[in-house]
Length: 244
Image (cartoon, rainbow, N blue to C red; front, side, top):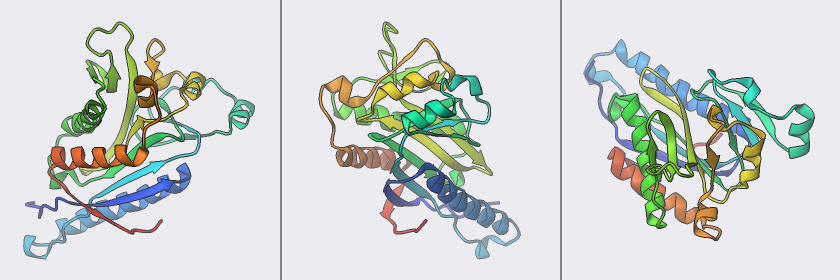
């Protein structure tokens, strides 16, 4: 099937939003996009409807999420501990192990039909990482990848003190994506001490504000990330008012 390509992406900034509410919202947009793709298969090309793409930015209250292949023992808190920390816990349907979301972290959920861009999930992950790497470079911070480990790292080249600054975990079906990246901008990294982040016990976690010595304007980070994502995916972002 020769799908009509739509590189327009609806940008939605949810501000601060509960994890479950956002997950339900993602699932709805994801399901609608997959359903549209399935419907197009029964139509001649002239009658097919282009699929929509979305990019959601959000900050969550304290929450730990475990991917479908993750190890529950990597959460080091029981229910009482979660209550004490004011955090929630969810097992979810993305790839990857356990991670933390919380205030000061820019979470991005691209719901993209990769048939509109490129059908390569590994390239998709690398492009998300590259957008974060370029954003960090805008702040004078050198970052990169460690072979075999998904995400964005500092001291990735020397491995003297490698520190993860952005985690990735995605789900895809029929080349439609959901979930995404979690970029530590002004994060209280103590919350990571309650988990084995991404199942990697011997690597530290950091935040941009710790690396440059001061808090960072989150709106500036968002704008930089948007510009780099637009460039890397050759997408056209349009502000949207899609409601939860």
